[in-house]
Every structure is written in structure tokens, then in C-alpha cells.
Amino acid sequence: MGYVGPAEAAPILVDGLQRLEYRGYDSAGIAVHDGTVVAIRKAEGKLGRLVAMLDEHTPAGSTGIGHTRWATHGPPTDFNAHPHTDPAGDIAVVHNGIIENFLPLKERLGESGASFASDTDTEVLAHLIAEEYDGDLKEAVRRAVGRAQGAYALVAMSRKEPGRIVAVRMISPLIVGLGDGETFLASDIPAILHRTRSILVIENGEMVDVTPDGVTIETLDGAAVEREPLEISWNAEQAEKGGYPHFMIKEIFEQPDVITETLSGRISGTSEVVLDGVAFPDGFVEGLDKIWITACGTAYHAGLVGKEIFERKLRIPVDVVYAHELRYRDPIIRPGSLTIAISQSGETADTLAAAELARSRGSRLLAITNVVGSTLSRISDDVLYTRAGPEIAVASTKAYLAMLIGEYLLTVAMGRARGRYTPAESADMITGLRHLPQAAEEILEGAADIAELAEAFDGAEDVYFLGRGVDYAVAMEGSLKMKEISYIHSEAMPAGELKHGTLALVTRGTPVVTVLTQGDVYDKTVSALQEVKARGAHTIAVAYADDADAHKHADRVIRIPRVPDLLSPVLSAIPLQLLAYHVADARGHDIDQPRNLAKSVTVE
Ligand code: AGP
Image (cartoon, rainbow, N blue to C red; front, top):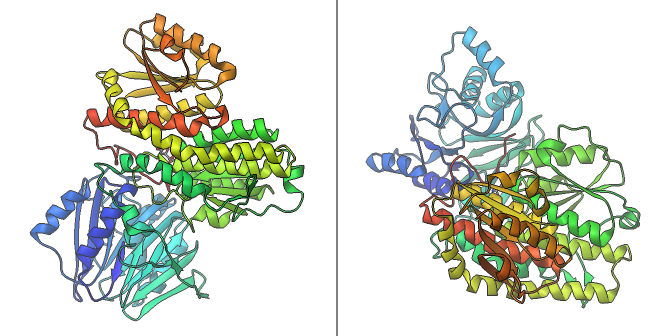
């Protein structure tokens, strides 16, 4: 966060940090300039500790910078919290991302007699800027950045230049909010959306100079940049909890609307899909013979569903590869292929690197992302926005469902182009998609029953999720949700794989959740369910409402409305999200900010 204006900076910075806390929350700090001195307050732990410190004494001043940290270099401690300064305290810096060459820089500075107060790479930046400083902060930052390598964003201020902050974007996101006589800097729009809707998105390799007279942007090479602000249409309330105890449960309950929003305006007549932002060249889809999907975490699981539906419906081979794997392989990605990079934030460092790699090999790059103006959207040839609105909980829910909807829309659009969908078939698919918001609503009406099932997880140390085909992809997502917020060890596997080893771990009372929606492999999945039941597992199945047999195979059955099998992931994921939520809630965990995790992983 950064602020330059007429108001007291500290409350504005802290308020912005509260809205950014989902990006990192192991320590926090601010630096405020009162025209004479720069006062720094910082504390390990969640923002509340900093707020308590500020309650005792809030530094005065109308220029400031602030930060919430997700540790990369050095443990979360008071002294590793940002802002960091040079030894004289002249330069204060906050930064996201990593300075990759910080060690040689630090050694070199150390040889010149510098001493360091933290383990961080950020402090090295403060030293470099101080070393380069000769009265002009912007030029000092420019020269210092020229010596640093990595993917990061930084904001700096100088004790000698009150009313000025300078920021740089090197890959990690950075935005500027234009207020009435005041300027805000942040790493994400929700931090300042309630203050201004007029946003400048800073591009890679650009620097921003903020003074009371206004904002100038230039490239690191010194070329002036003219940029029109974006007017953001999100409702500020969308970024608040809206009466729910946690963002996660609020976001789960938003899903019917999110499905509607993501479909909205993209269906023409009864059988055609029109995707704004996707404009394949003539003949591209017809000649396409390979699709790559790359993503991380939940977005990767959405990609696994995508593989199933693209291969079945388009008959194009699809490889889904974790972005952190793809980027360091030598993949056989050929010109003329299509790479789909999926990312809620559009800022995940691994996904961006994998997407760049695919593009450099001549693949057409299509982004499925939730954040308008995100880095991924700007490096892609085509962008399918998911319209889930800001997702605040670290555990992704509504963005996942929206990604699936994006994939179905893409399937219909491409299927029509390839002649694999007749108008009647695509009309059927569209009817199915249009029914999903109502079906999702019905599941949410039964949320209280799912909350009761959480009892089955009392004292559980291991949980297993099973499924076949798209059910396996959903099981993967259910398992990730469970482990990231309940901290119970959880594994997902294809139902047929269990007997090849993992069955040895199933003992009396082990919860096993089976997704049981796919008609063509129903009996096969039931066999696996029986195998775990025979070993005393506590079995829970997710099955269609009209499945008359499910209760014969599982101890408890969560019902979802009947839909065509290929669309079932959109519905079967919802009970698994609710289950994870209630298990974590019963254990008293910090659901929106689980330990060790951050919402956007913008470092490698
Ligand atoms: C899921 O609940 C996690 N928050 C995480 O796996 C996330 O999906 C992953 O880090 C990818 O994030 P992205 O969609 O913003 O790229």
C-alpha cells in the first residue's frame, strides 16, 4: 500500500492492508512521513497486532507505505516485517516478490561495511536505493532496480523528500488509485475500491512517481507513459463479508449467481455461444490437434475437468500439466496448438511462466482468469473472464465453479466450429448449463445437512476422496479444500487405484468420500466403495437425488440434482466445499486465512 494526499496516512494504509491481508498475513508494518521524520511501526503476526501497536501511538503524517507479509526470505518476525530501511533510516521500502540476486548483492554491501537488521531480500533494496540516492528518489530507485533481478513490485519513500513515493513493477502486480487530490498505491484493486474506482494498472517494467501534484508513469528506460485510468464497476460490497462469518462460506453461497454471471451475455439464441475476448483466427479451431492446460492448485483441478470435457466433446488430445512442472520441462508444444492457462488471480508466478513458455513455442495462449487486467490476461491472445467477482478466502470456491463454466462455454463454442455439436446438441448443453444456478441453489438449501456430516470427521487424521473420470477431478478438489483449511491429511485418488496400495491405510472409522455421479463407471466406483466399507471406513457418497442405490453402498449420501453426467462437477464440488468448511469450522480454524498459505502465490 502507498498513500500521498492531504489525509492522515496511517489509517488509510491499515485499512488497505486489512483488505489485502489475504495476500499474506504473517507480519505487517507501515512507514509514515510527517514532513520531518519517517516513523516505522511493524509487528509479527496478523494485522491486529500492528493495529494494537498503533492504538497506543499512531504516527502522524500524510505520506506513507505499508505491507502485509508472506514470508519468503527469513521467518515471520518483527525484524523481518516490512517496511525495511537503510542503516541511516533515510529510505523505507516495502516489496512483494523475490530479489533473486539478493545474496551476492548483500555480500557486496557487507564487504563495504553495511550491516543488516533482517534476513530479507527487501532490506537489500533499501540499501541499494540509499547507495544510489543523490537527491532524487525516482532516479535512485531506477538505478537500484537496474542492479536487482527477480519478479517483484516495490514502493519506496525517502526521508529527504516528504510527499513523494516511487514504485516499480517487475512482474508482481501494482495498481494506482486516483482520488480527489490524493493517490493510492496497492497490489490489488479491492484494497482501495471503496476510495476510488479510477485505477491505473501499472505494466511490467514501469515505474510510478507520486507527489502531491499527481502521478507520472514511465518505463525503467525513462520513456514517459500516457495511460487512461480504468473505471472499475465492481461493487465495493462484493469485497466485504456481507453478513457471513467467513468469506469462504459467503463465496460458496454466491455460486448460483456466479454461474449466472459467467453465462450471461454469452449465449446467443438457443444453441450458440459467443465469447467476448476470444477471437480465434479463421480455421484455427477446425485444424487444432493439441490442447495444453496449465495451472496450479484449484485452477489445475478445473483443468482436469477441462481435459475430460474437451477430449470427450472435441476429440482433441489434451495434456494438463502443473505450471511449476511445465515451466521447467522441455515440452513438445508446437505452433498451432492451444494452451489454456487457468488462474483465478491471473498473477500466479508459475502459471505466468508456463504460459510465457507455451507462447514462446508458438502456441496460441488463452487465459481463463477472474481478474480483469491481470498479468495473465494481458499476455494472452484470448481471455475468457470468469466473472466470479473478488474472491477473498484463500480456499478457492466460486472461482473454481466459474472456471468450469468457462470451460463448458469454450467446449460448445469450439465444438460448434469443429462440427462436433449439432445445433440440437449444443442447445441441450446450453439448457443444462442454464439449469445449473437453480440446481446449485437446491444444494445450498440443504447446507445444514452437510454441516451435520462434519461430525464424521471428529478426530480423523486421514481422509480419502475417490472418483472416476470427472468425479476423480472433483475428488482432487474436494481433497485440497479439506486439507488446506481443516489441516487433516487428505488424499484423492481414482477409485480403481485404491487397491494398488492406499487401501492399506484405511482402517475402522477412516472417512472416505466418494463422488458417484458417472453412469458409465458407476458399478466400478461402487466396487471401490465396497472395498473401503469392508475395512470399516466411514463412507460418504455424493450422488444424484434420483440414485436409488447409493444409500445401499455408503453410510451417508449427499444428494445433488440430476444433470447430464458431464456437467456434474459444477454441482458435486459444492457439497465438498461445504464439508471442508464445516469440518474446519468445527476445529476452530482460521478458515479464510489458513496457516502457511496465501491467496495469490506471486513467487516461485
Ligand atoms: C485453492 O484453494 C488455493 N487457493 C490454490 O490452490 C490456488 O488455486 C492456486 O494457488 C492457484 O491460484 P490462481 O488460480 O490464482 O492461479
